[in-house]
Structures are given as structure tokens and as C-alpha cells.
Length: 357
Length: 167
Image (tube, rainbow over all chains, first blue to last red; front, side):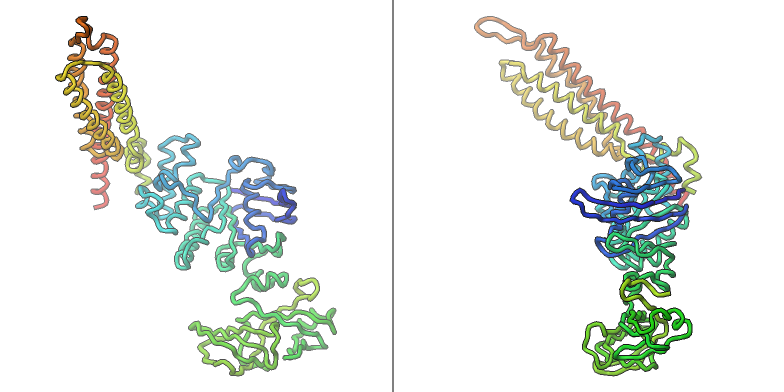
């Protein structure tokens, strides 16, 4: 398979709008990389530059050490799966999957073997004589993947392949993609705005915002040690709660609560004495039984957990809203008060928005 | 199991027929229709000048319509390895051969008298041309039909072995 190097990639459109800024990434052979970020952050543009569907304004793209920055898409030996499947409606599943190889004028017997092998992997053997319109969304997406598989490319590129599927099908197809990656051990780059897809599929995640890479790391690294406020707010569902706090000696204080800092936190925040920083707490890191008073607005029981939405007591400000994911089944009503504690805390520099470590 | 079976190139060739259509036969069928069009465009140029031949030409027009509809349907059937349509193409081919001996030969032997001058209804070059068109059309039908029958039988036999394996 393949190693990919992206060095200082920029994308500037003709109207001078810059979509991608100084993108750097080393993708190892067989790695599953997920580019994640909100709409318009440049993740699809980056993928299209890798595929050769967009020109690279500046920077270098290497595939196995070979410079392919200016190579046409057909010479890059990469296969792309699109969100809208891009299947030929008048062809059967078999013909769709065989099409690229037929264009290459490969031996029909070889094509046949490859198509049947791919169909077997994807569970499409019984659908080979059907037209795409006779298939469900998930099956169509599998056909699109099959079309990529038969080409045996060095790299698979997925551009939000599950966005058109309903939630149940998305989960099933996600597992199939994961299985496919394990079975083929292929280098895969996958674009999504869905953090669940990113966290479940990726070996490493590239989190992007406004054309800039915010953080590259394993799913656990992004979840546990977010590099900045953006990553902290983007990864995790429900999103992290943020509060401005002032560091006073061994405490983090704001007008609604005071939190005692651990020794490690005190060392980490030594340079911020007397300054305001941002305290981040994930809803699942909040537990009952502390001294932070929350006025409950609404209560959502999820079975094993309860989502409690409220405000820090005595506040009306929007930045004092808080979401807690409490363990067990709770029956709070609007107006109830609940005492909570923050079990794991993240601190961010208010000016640079970077995590304080 | 599937992949083991496909190690044999002869088996692969037959197995491909399960998913690839018989475009060879259907293409030949379209060609048969085209030759038939050349035939009737040429034959209807003739001025037979007699009610008897005009009735024959009327019948020929109706047969042309039937032939083209029949072969077009057969082209779709034979594409999907339907044995019945392959046989139909063989029948249509035979029909085209028989047609050579009806209208073209009659028109070639007939004469028409205009202002006391007698002319042949069809000259020899035209006769040769229409015979070529009908013969070519018949040949296309025969080959398409024979290939269709051969492939349909092979595929049916192969499918039967697959069903036995599954059972």
C-alpha cells in the first residue's frame, strides 16, 4: 500500500479565497486517517487536492516518496468514494464495479474475478444483476466502495460517504468500512463532519477549522487532551462546558463557584496567577455531590445516563449555561437545584485559546 | 468456494455470462433490422403498375413491421440468454430467405407497359441489391440465434450445476 506526505499544502481559489492553510501530515502505510471539522473548514478541499480533483496552489504531495503534486488524477492510483455514490444508473451493479477496469482494457476474466471478490467482501453477490435504483442507500454506497476495491488502489479516499444514509444504516456501513480497512489493511483518508464517525473509525484524526489544522492525534488524544478550545468544543457529545475562571492561589474562581485546584493543576497554572483562563469540563466528567450549584432547566433520561441542562445558580448569563451527563436515572424538574462537582478539568489560555499543559 | 471454481478460465468465461449480457447476438439482431430497412427502401422504389403486386407490397409492408418488432423484441430477449427468443431469431432468418423468392423474384420477372412500351419492373442490379440485403439480414438472424441458443444452453447447464452445489 502507500505512505502519503502532505507538505505545506495551500489552496487558494481564483477569487483569492484561501480554503486550506499550510497543511502538513504524514500518513503511514495502512493508516486510517479521518479529517474532521465543521462545514467549510477545508477538509473536502484537502481530500480533493490529494485525489487530484483540485489543483494544489502551493506545497508538495508525495506518494511513497514520489512527488505527485502535479500528476493528473488518473495517474495517482487512488480511488475516491463520494457522498452521492456517483453510480451509473443505466448499468447493473456488476457493470458499475467493472467499469473502471473495462476502460483500462483489462482481461475480462480478470475483471470478473476481481468484481466477484469485491462483491463477496461487501456482501453484494446477490445484487450484481440489479440496477442502482433497485438498491438501498447503504447498498449503493457499498457498490461505490466495490468500484474502488476492484481497482486495488494504493489509497482509498472517502468524502463523507455516510452522510446520505439514515442513522441505523450509517452505523452498519461504518462497521463495514472498519471491517474493510482491517481486511485490506489499506491506507485510507476519510472526510466527515460527524465526530462519532471520526472517533470510531480513525487511527488518527486531523481536526480542522477555517482551513487550518487544529490538532492531529489519536481519537483518545483529541478527546482527552484537546489542543485548544476549538478541538475541545468540537470533539465530544454533548460538547464541553466552558467557564471563565480567575486563578487565585490554589483555587479557580468565578462569580458562581470556586474550584480547588489539585497540585498538578497548581503547577500547570503557576504562570496564570491572578489571570483569567477558560475552564473546560465535559458533561460526562460532572458528577453529583459537589459544591457547584446548578439550577435545572430540563432533564433528558437516556437510560444509563441523564442529561441535565441548567445554569449555574444565580446567573442569567449565557456563558453560565451548563450541561451535565449524570450517571443513572435522574428525575429532576425545571427549577430544581442540584449540587455537582467537576471530576476532570481542562484549562485553556483565554487569549491564544490553546490548552494549558 | 466461488473463487476456487473461478480458477479455471473456461468456467470463468461461462460464469461471466451470469452478469454480462449477450451483446454479440443482440448487436447482430440490430444489424438484421438495418439490412431489412435497406431492403424495403430499395424494393418500394419499384413501380409494379398492377393491383396484384400492390397487394403483395402491402403485405410486405405489414410483414416488415412485424419482422422489425419481432426482431427488436428478440434482441432484448437474446441479450438476456432467453432460449425462446434465440429460436425466434432462427425462424425470422428463415423467413428472410423465403422472402427472396416472393416479391423480389416476382418483381424481376414482371413487366409494366406504359404508352405501349414494355419495361421490366426491376432491373438486375436492384434485384442483386435486395437479395444481398435479405440474405445479410437472414445471416445476422441465423448467427445471432445460433449463438444465442449455444450460450443459453451453456448458461442453463452451468446454473444447474451451481444449484446442485448449493443444494
